Image 1 (cartoon, rainbow, N blue to C red):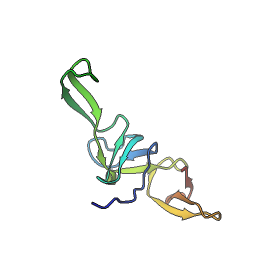
Image 2: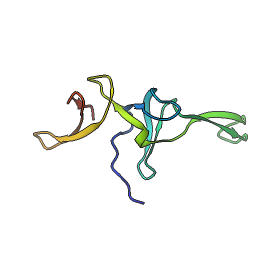
Image 3: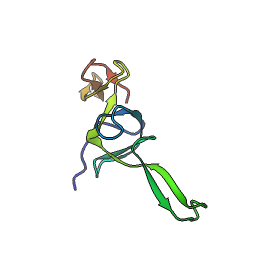
Image 4: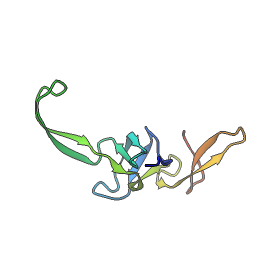
Length: 109
């Protein structure tokens, strides 16, 4: 399976644009480029029934974040405070940066 270049990175602030958590925003905890999915902090929560083990002394029902499709999230622009599509632009020094296609402002990192 080919690894694709994604429009979000770890620690980006994103908004979910489709699914049960539509309209909510959070920080990206993990990016899985091979599967085309991201894990967003405190969103898309699922319940897991677990047995007691060394890592979890008590068993029971544990809530944790599940991966969500990368196509269902958009980067939140700090300039216009809205979810926006991003593009890549080369600066004069040759470095590449992401920019918001709504307000044309450079997105950090």
